[in-house]
Length: 225
Ligand code: CTP
Ligand code: CA
Image (cartoon, rainbow, N blue to C red; front, side):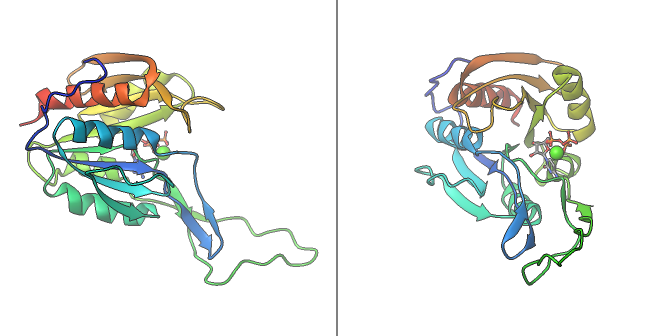
């Protein structure tokens, strides 16, 4: 399970990875977003290619260059991400949801820029829930026997929240990392625990996102049909 695995052990496999963070527009110039850089998802894509997989990367707002040898699909919102992931997942052996999907989106989109009004406080922002792509994929697998992997960013009670989330989502593996002001987001390195639905728990020491990515693939591999 070490970094730098280069055996083509994913040859003949098709993997789908989502990366980045969705943006939910309020009006033509503003959105609700998050701090996901997309680097972990891109590391997953590069390592999967190195291990021989066919890779579809569904990217939301990362600003990162397309990795070589990867089919990249660019999306913006959670709704678009869902469409692209479900479509690609129909013929995938594994799906890894590394993207930070906005839980909520503005209830209404203003087609013109929202303007201030003199002497008036702003109206409260009404939000609605976005679809939970990981839960949906896990519940009705687009392809029988495929392996579904989620990521969870937690600030408190990391392991307890991670175990609960794994059960709740119904995925096979959940990569849990602790996030904070300067942890994980945008950085080149990551530290995590990978929780499996069968109870296996794999701690991954602080290190390059590639090393975590290789560990994820090494845990996906024995679970593939
Ligand atoms: N996810 C998803 N669709 C959503 C929200 C999250 O597919 N609408 C996926 C993410 O891509 C990630 C996993 O679910 O792989 C966990 O995301 P996280 O935000 O940690 O979980 P939530 O269920 O949204 O819980 P929380 O209330 O802690 O944000
Ligand atoms: Ca969330």
